[in-house]
Image 1 (spheres, rainbow, N blue to C red):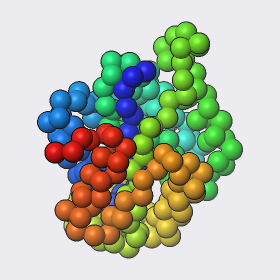
Image 2: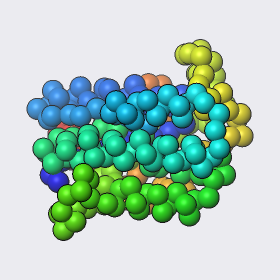
Image 3: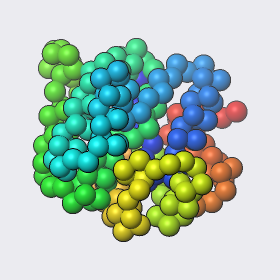
Length: 219
């Protein structure tokens, strides 16, 4: 696969969705073909699963299984085909979110999450040739790091919360710790962005990383 896979991570209210759209526009201005997508979601079936995950009470294992089921559909029908076409895939959340939210936040067994990660991201998409398949993982992950209390105040202003956004500060503190653990395990992939600063400063930091990783060219 000749494309580039970039994920945007962070707790709800960190501002990642704003900057993923800005980066998509900048890449398109520089002549890149961009697939802008999200998780859970990205396909008609995965979007239906998203509605369940975000709004229905359920057992933590059920929640994790639905998230990874949506991810499998997303990988097979959106991410892998776009990368094969040489596009830049910008994804609002990916598997790091499962380890942060279901793992650290919910306290779900990370060994099971690791097994699901291996199955879902390490099997050939659509039954393809195993010899031509690689483990599907972002080439670059932006982690928008923001104190939970600040994120909560932003969400109160922005919209009515879903079941995750309505969680306690302690929950989001654990989620942030989960992201920190994922970054510690794979520091070359991650770029931590201090999201507790003005929007222009956050975008400047994103651009600096994107240029350093040769995702964006110098203007």
